[in-house]
Amino acid sequence: MANTLSASLLGWLRCFEAAARHCNFTQAAAELCVTQGAVSQQVKQLEQWLDRPLFLRTPRALVLTPEGERLRFVLRESFQAIEGTLTQLRKPRDKQPIALSCSPSFAMVWLTPRLGGFFRQHPDIGLRVYGEFHALDRSRMLRDGTEAAVRFDPGGYPDLKAHQFLEEWLIPVASPAYLDAHPALQSPEGLRASMLLHDVSPWDGAGEFEEWQCWLRHAGLTLPDESDGQRFNLSQLAINAALAGQGVAMGRSALVLEDLESGRLVDLWGIHARSHASYHFVCAHGQTAQVAEVEAWLVAEGAAFDAARRRVLGIG
Image (tube, rainbow, N blue to C red; front, side, top):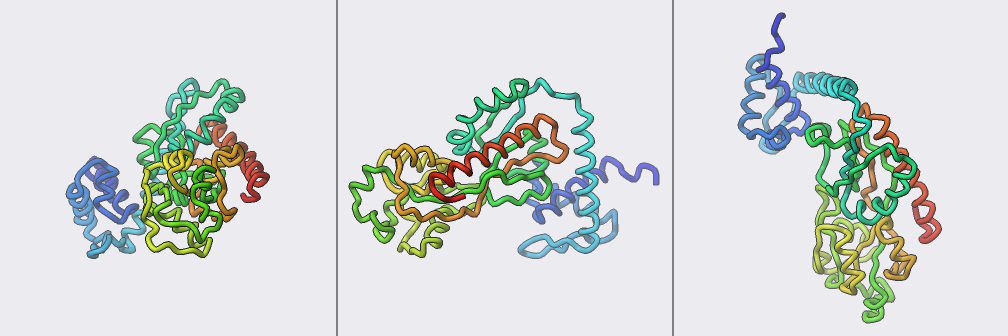
């Protein structure tokens, strides 16, 4: 069948693969930087060419037919094989710095102070850190030229390699001055919703009050309106507000351990809840040797921090 894979057919297949992965034309269109109508039309043309439906179009979502599921599987394997081969065939970039996309608060508080040690161990590897927390998939990483990333989230990367290198624990924290001014906080029952400092974007797709709700469930407490209090879009902003005596923040142990050791913040009640999210090192399959070195370093640093956390807080 000469010329079966024409340029038009390849375009239809690319649109179908994105729509099948998301089960949504709109999300596929956003990934491919085209309109939703264009994706829908391309998929329709593929279905007409095959003379069979690939999706059942319900009011709530797209559902793959058995034929669509079969094609989706083949395309996923094929595109990953092509991308992996292209990565290996590209001109070596040993002297080019690695672009590391990293959750902003984690980059500022945990990662940056440790980078000196990385550069001493690996003087031949350049590393450029970008503070970002958008969701990742293979297509976006390739499009943006991002070799690796660190994300704080529950995981789930079907088309990427993801390695959890550090789990996280949630700890309500406040400044000593704030605690002195609010003696009711000597016990958890004295907590009021108006005191809460929220990071309303703990990870892409999380609920605005996810972390406080998680901790309150763990502690067996309820507040009349846990959505009350100040709101921020970065954890470190909420922590800074707590340091300034403005309320009680939900601290992540990786971001507040040094402040707790120094006495700048207080672990209010010693009740620590395991977060639904962890820190993951994310990269495309077929990583370079340099990216593997970054991953190995992060795993070692995560283990060292976990040991320190166990010593200070007895958790981890």
